[in-house]
Length: 246
Image 1 (cartoon, rainbow, N blue to C red):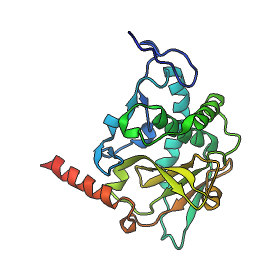
Image 2 (cartoon, rainbow, N blue to C red):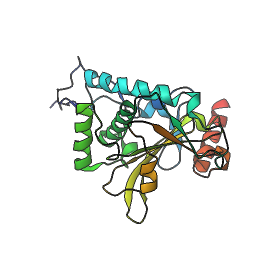
Image 3 (tube, rainbow, N blue to C red):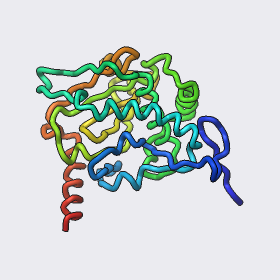
């Protein structure tokens, strides 16, 4: 018996004529470098082997998301978006001139695909039916009316780090604050981190730094070498690179 698949956005059946290899964390997560991906257990693998799904979207809906992702890639790869001063002198920078709505939609598409895929390494990403339906509605409309509903916060290390700049980490759920607000955090190449609130509760300090319709704040994370966040993953990545050279 043949199992039929349907596009989660438009509802059309996915056939050989409209099937597409849809990125889970999108092409803007995997530019340049060796494209390493950090899994939940801290091990490191080839991002290209973890990045695809063929049963989520039809080609037309994938192209629709791609236009938003192109805008995001322009911002993420811009050198003007990296803080260059110590964190105590420059807590954040503000980016103007980008389409905030398109960038927010690109992040919503990412977290949705990671939740919908059956790939086992993304089993820790589960938006639940209510949030899945709501994000699908936003993507179908192609419009963000309330940037605080799924607040997206961006941060970036001020120092360049060869290994860190070549890596991404799949979304990891965090439960923050006394109110137990649910956020998903993702590391991306270029020393980027993005967080998205998927919760009725929220952390006010994070929401104040989130993307708005008028600007995009980038929190300065300081020197990557002083951060413990990627210590374990970086160690594994260095070992992996050494083995690859043998």
